[in-house]
Every structure is written in structure tokens, then in C-alpha cells.
Image (tube, rainbow, N blue to C red; front, side, top):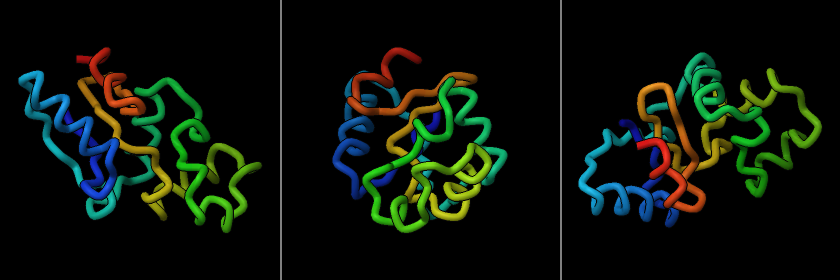
Length: 111
């Protein structure tokens, strides 16, 4: 179990605490420092069962600056690989399943 985590994010901290309170100790990946590769982002998208667009933080200033609202799948994935701040957080990966922790309780369905 791996939590893609940003300790500065309230939802990310809440998700980690929720998991720990439930007796789980996920490995924590500080994905802003340990930047995922394009292949890892594609694997995450597939595990989530969503499009790249659904994985994006559309409220980020950079999202608008890069004009990603109408970008295709490959462009969005490349943007996340180059700018991991654009990846929605937190994300829990458990084997071949993944869930975005918004709300934090949504990660519990894949444990």
C-alpha cells in the first residue's frame, strides 16, 4: 500500500491519519520530490480507471497557464510528469487498485 502524499495538503494529511487510525501503515511517497515517471502516471491512471483529466488539479494556476483544459490525454500525462503538482492528491495505491482521497474515506474501498 503506497500513499502518494503531500504533507502540506490537508486532505492528504487527513487520509494518512484515517489509514493509520484504521491500523494501516502505508508507505508514503512524497511525489513532489520523488517525481513519478510517465509510465507510473499511466499505470496510476489505469489503476484508478479514469482519464488523465480526472487525475488533474484543475484549480492549480499552472493548469490554466499551460492551457490544459482542452489538452489530449498524452499532453496531460506529460504535463503531470513534468509538473507533479498537477496530480490530484492524495492517491492510495493498493496492489492493482487505486483511489483518490477526496474525500479521504474514498480510499477505504480499495483496502
